[in-house]
Length: 399
Image: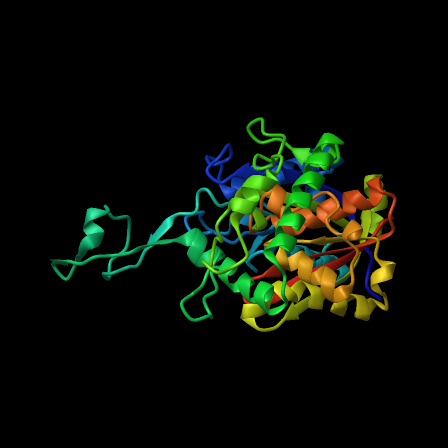
């Protein structure tokens, strides 16, 4: 029988806008902030944490195993192992999944799982053109076999995080999302209406203090930097972002952002030993994999798979957190699974507050856990799609 695993606490940083207030902080520095906050809030003896699993996508230039570096910067001892996970937008969700399995298999009793991303610091990449190692001057990189040759610098943020490598022409994920909008008739008007509501809900949640109890400050940033009051008139005038004849605009897409999130999870004996009241129980996970061009529909499939395995129906779930990579993702999930809008992303989502790729999975899980407590609901599902045509879903139950 699997051991029960509980979310004891959930913390995140405010999200910094692309090249905004957090641009000078590395991913591991952001990760260390949430790990340290979890430790301080729980007053947990450091040796109780048996591992730190962190999701991160854009690791070029970040150094070896950024999760380990974040753990050490947070003050955890050298004996605490760290592992970095990359499953694109579901990176921190899969980090949580593996950390949960560690506890269920009795290989650990207390773990920290989360994610971190500095999209602002993602470097440009230049292909190696000569058989040599070490740092180079930019001018030296133009020399190949004694002759000058033009080179292209790849944007690692786009190349490793925002484009689909298995599709012809390596399209942007937004261009791939257009397939979903066109095939299922999800109109631009529906997407814009959804996005405006996401901004409204996130603004209301911030005004109501819904994030205050679990937000960790970085450089004095306490509020998501990209959050603003949506201007419907301006949104309606925006050009399509990825296809001249398309329906997806910048306003109906997740904002590029920097940030981190983390969860302290433990088994029942550890919870009793810590003397803290857990906020939710992690019930089960499901992973869906299908065609890369249909990553937008994977969250709906993963949710159905999860509920089927648990013997539950949509009506049994009080709240849903579906990552707003693009508005078409939750819109399709609501349509295909008949999820009422009032149950979906009730405190807003990535369209309004930003999407630091490696951090969003545990951000939506933490948000869901706090929602269950604040709104006195019983069950919730958090799910994020990821490039390659996949999604990871998790079922939570309020304790």
